[in-house]
Image (tube, rainbow, N blue to C red; front, side, top):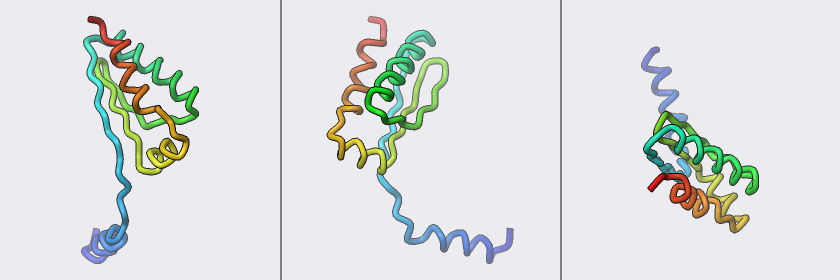
Length: 94
């Protein structure tokens, strides 16, 4: 890639406002705990009609909500984030 092309790409990024995001990693002791959390999060998403970005592995789940999603949830006066955090206490074996 030429320097001119790189400069053009950088110029496009200059002035772009990055929206705030909420990124949260949830760690679990086992895959069944992770799966239970993901299933309960899917139910919450369906109920709230909001679907965050999720990636997961055997014992973790990363949930990202971008600025637009935060604005939507605030506008709805949604308790999605609070309920999502509460799912962990019902998921993790004591």
